[in-house]
Length: 153
Ligand SMILES: COc1nc(N)nc2c1ncn2[C@H]1C[C@H](O)[C@@H](COP(=O)(O)OP(=O)(O)OP(=O)(O)O)O1
Image 1: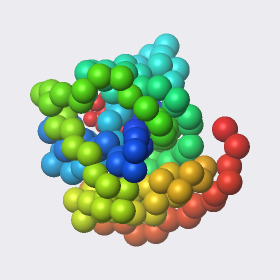
Image 2: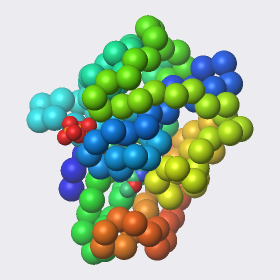
Image 3: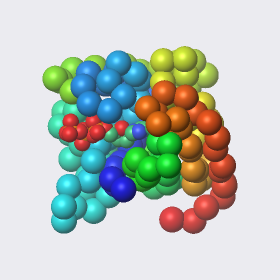
């Protein structure tokens, strides 16, 4: 199982997403984030990844979720999810990511991983959650999911 992180900065009624340019989920909108490196904490990872992908800093960062992704019968990724209420700097396009702000009532779910429509609204509503999402072998179709809310981290 690969551990990873994901963060959605939500500032002034808008959420900052990236159009992923390479790797897992390339072409889709997602929050910035990535795989946790050996010896790194999840919190250290999300600050590093956001800086690498967008050249910005995060502030008022809280952990709000944990997502467990399964492809076929195999564990795929365990993702620590953060919400940031502020950023420092101006998001820049890099070779990994193209940033874009969206109104929180206009999130582009049709261009995101299919699990996102189940947990992103909870994050935007200030809820905490865990979720387990089971995809087909290739990770194309979401076959089933289960979520809990009001979780303490
Ligand atoms: C399967 O469903 C997923 N849904 C969502 N919303 N996000 C997902 C899903 N699977 C993975 N992710 C996220 C979790 C991480 O934020 C990234 C992983 O991306 P990547 O493998 O490209 O991570 P990096 O460390 O940036 O990769 P390289 O440095 O090796 O390019 O996707």
